[in-house]
Image 1: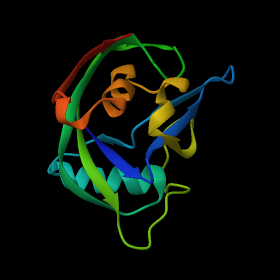
Image 2: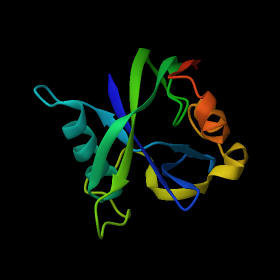
Image 3: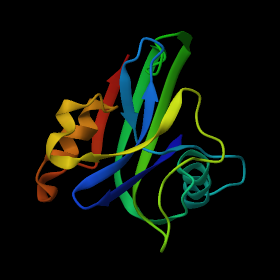
Image 4: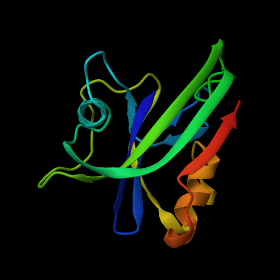
Length: 150
């Protein structure tokens, strides 16, 4: 189980930027796994601080999505069979906060980026269903984005 932050500002979404060893860029929502005894909002606040350096305010659940893979989407290395359920929450940046260098970024993370909602299809956003979901009519968005298989 993992939690992810959906932060929208000025028609842009905040994403973590990853760079594959071959130079390919990929983008994912900030967030990650819960630690034992930690509730989801606390985990999301901690993960966002580690990855973006910014304090976030957690609001309500936005959507769910799953990853099932035997290879890492970040660098295509072999991993044990992997299944992760992600809960994405609508979040905001706390007053005066700006994303930047995190205190403990993910491996291969190369900072953050604000991606324009109108052109998410131009980027390698993971999961791809998230980009389509964000570009869709908000009144017609499903709660579950389904399963991405790698």
